[in-house]
Image (cartoon, rainbow, N blue to C red; front, side, top):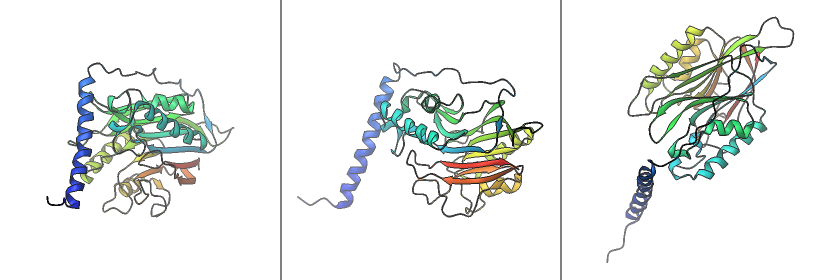
Amino acid sequence: MLPMRTGSVQGVSMMAQRLRVILLVISMLAISGCATLQAPPEPSVSSPSSQIHYGPLRVMSLNIAHGRRDEANQLLVSHDTFKENLLQIAELINRESIHIVALQEADGPSRWSGGFDHVYKLAEYADYPWYRRASHAQSWLFDYGTAFLSQLPFEDVLSYTFQPSPPTMDKGILLVQIAWMREVGDSEPLLVDLVSVHLDFSRKSVREQQIAELTSVLEERKHPIIILGDFNSDWFAQDSIVQALAENQGLQVYRPDAIDLGTYKNGNKRLDWILISEELEFVGYKVLPDLVSDHKAVIAEIIIR
């Protein structure tokens, strides 16, 4: 009998791995009719000007990868492991004393990620009283989008899903507004819009269209803004989406040409960004090394000029 070549062994191994995933999907299809999805309580809401933030604002952006941490696919993760992964994220948020957290790939009750609302569970674990989730992609198997956790009440909330971009899943934004004063004694609070955004990963043309839609939404509001999220684009890319948005909207970016602020997997790519209006100012910025997703968390400390 002829010996099997190394390439053939690797091919068999890859086929076996794919077969395991296919079998798992088939098993989920079989039980989907009786699977129970756990609906969370209604998200918190606030009355106008019920609470004002004073002083520096600490914000974080994190693509939580459907709660799978560093697994290749969320279909391979157990219900309990999802909760353990989310608990690690909550502990990271508390450790860094974040006021407002922007999330992407944040799941509602979904069969492929444990059947419970990840945003509500994170808010519960981290003890954040205010949270909101926007669904941009939905099917019998999944329900996910962008989200916010907050120590501060929201003055306004707006959800927007970008135009469909098949074959990739729909993306979108969630916008929340807070009341903010530089210091006690200022005459009036500044109403600031914060936007959690997730752009398409596959095509620059789709990202350009999504940025055009985002710009249209923001121009109608005319408030100072903080945009946080997964742009799937770096500063050095040809016709960079991040660079175009910053230049066209007069937004500030912290050390845009830095090579030590990578956010995706091994840190070679800076895909996750925080951009701010000229009325605001960065006084701190960092990318955390913690492995809680295939993306790394980005933190900025911001003040009113």
